[in-house]
Structures are given as structure tokens and as C-alpha cells.
Length: 131
Image (cartoon, rainbow, N blue to C red; front, side):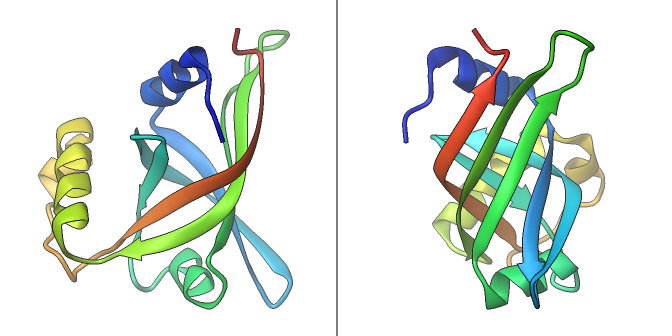
């Protein structure tokens, strides 16, 4: 899946997405903080969340990253697979990216094994309003 330069800039400028997962054929959607890094979306979560529990059972997602302005709506929607990062080099790298981007991470830091990241690997996308 290829993103345009403008889609990449849009994703790099955003901080919030809505991610959907599913359990027992019941959709679950929630707002999340994210970073876009090297073509992938990373989301911080906790072990006791419905999202984490859903991903453990069925590692699939849908996400919407958008800005709503009447007549000037911009959005990118993705679907794909999820990997869980709990420790290791990739966890440490993404943690540093989150730490630099979000004050809430600096105010309440965590260590490997205390809270995971979800690595969203988009397989499909649709976007509009991003020229």
C-alpha cells in the first residue's frame, strides 16, 4: 500500500485516531493517540483494555484519522493487521517517538512490559480531501 506525500504529511500532523476492533461479532471503537512512523501507525494501550483483549483474539483493525470541517473534510481510513509490541528494540524506538511527541507520556512514563504498543499494519486505505 502506497501513501502520497500529502497523505504522509497529514498523518504526521495528526495525534488522534479512532480505532475499531471486534469481539464476538460486536464492533468496538475508541479514540486513541497515535504516531505515524515509517509507514505504520503505532498506538499505546494498556493490558486491561477491550482493544488489547480484542487484538489478542483477532489481530485486525480499522482506523479513521480525520478532520471534520464542514465542506472541507479530510480523512484517511485504514484496515489491516496488528502486532503487539511489549519489549525489545522496536518497542524502545517507538517509546522514544511517543515520549518526544506526547507530554502525557513524559508525565507518566512506563517501562517495557508495563503497557504495550499496537503496531497497525495497513493493508487497505481510502482517503479524501487531501490533495
